[in-house]
Length: 351
Image 1 (cartoon, rainbow, N blue to C red):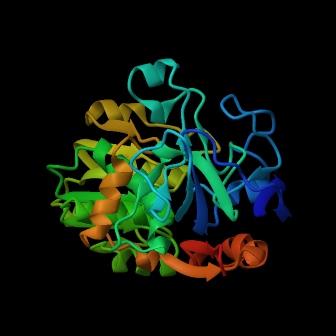
Image 2 (cartoon, helix red, strand yellow):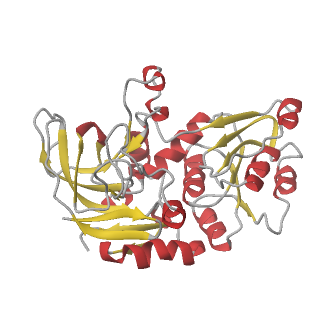
């Protein structure tokens, strides 16, 4: 079968590999859609992709990519209940060992050996077929099409981040960074009842996407003082909560400076360099800083239900659909050379 595999920096290939066998407790899925991702790895070389055998899976370079994907079950392994051939599913990719201190504490999303179907395992969604543990295949209702099913995973990251924040009583939220995760956070904030959602984003196109997806105000941090604009909108208080989705120091500073006394900043982005935090500001204004890692049990189901009920409509996030053989030219290179134009590029596996 075909599989998009990462061999190294700027080295993405569509290889022929063995089709997976459906084992006990597994389901075999024919992939429908998967998202182009791992841009950092493509540009810089392996960061989260294992170069030595992964603790959970023994996988190492080259690895099959794709951790945001959907498809149809074509085979059910021995011992599997509740799933059948023909079920349409989104796949929850995060893997945990179940034995480390984080897992025993009930937080497998923070597993010390955290892995993913799609970049630290021997299988991934950028392929024709995948065999996964049955508990990772989450059924999609008929009202949720398969292309939207491939967006469930990034939406669950946003869902978890918002759930981690004190959003229930928040009237105003600031989202710093209008990339895919920032735009997902915008949607979830609106779905969960936050009235005013402010987005700071340099790209004009992504500011437009943010407005389409539910933002009430957008600002360009390159030309506007975002913190002053937030204070203007909040009687000089600052936002109740903020979300750092940019992964750069200036964005982190904006997220922290843009919240009120006892406000909360949730860090969602992944960082290549450690940020500097103004501890004096945190102490003086009793601010809170939280981290949000991946998602928890139940988040996939909650997001799927929200899409089915019309509370989330991520379709505007899909900016292109391409064939597997076009993955480098119209996928990775497009995200590099036309970054402002794209949010989510989906690979239509059956195209």
